[in-house]
Length: 247
Ligand SMILES: [Fe+2]
Ligand SMILES: [Fe+2]
Image 1 (cartoon, protein in one colour):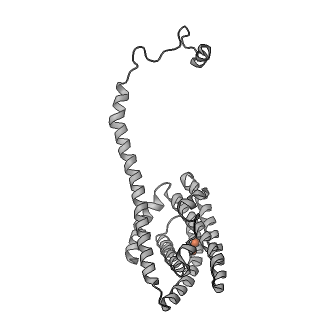
Image 2 (cartoon, protein in one colour):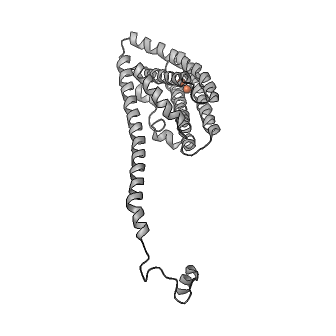
Image 3 (cartoon, helix red, strand yellow):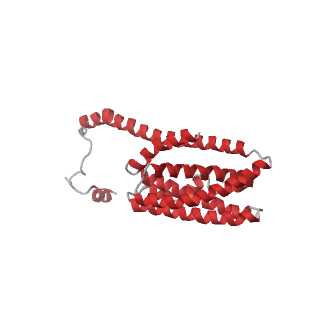
């Protein structure tokens, strides 16, 4: 899984970082994910019964909030804003992505599975950022920021892994939860890819349709005799004025 994922990330990073406009979209997605994590962690601070974890959740939330700001700042610095910036600013995205609204992730999963989720998501993020840095992507300024973020993500991985190990010793099915979660993330990734692929293909085929079918009709099109006409007695007159007078 690890090797395959790294291979996929290596290929995807070429598309994500080198195509025009793509880095902004990816960084905006990171900003949104970090903001969602911050809200999840703040909800955990409130809901947990484990006092010893409350401070870690809170520090974790502060880290994620900072990461969200860093990524949002990078999107703005790279310019060419549009959909990417809209994703950062639009709080509706958080609702759409199921991050806010309804029950929190902590409430839905319960603390052991929530921590397993945190561990899997954080470990995946660390792996992803390392692939980018190993490949020298994207620009040097973003790489510097990624290095700083990576240190804090490593802390998130280590404390959540310690908790997952603890639950495993207690006999909870953490490995099954982690596998189920990874499969779900894989499925969601496939759906995202399919949506993007669908958008590209529909733009292509609609373009072909307009060029080959609609364009010739436009060349042959002529006004019918007795079609558009200026108001009677007012050649070239303002039709709005004429309409008002007729009314
Ligand atoms: Fe983060
Ligand atoms: Fe994190």
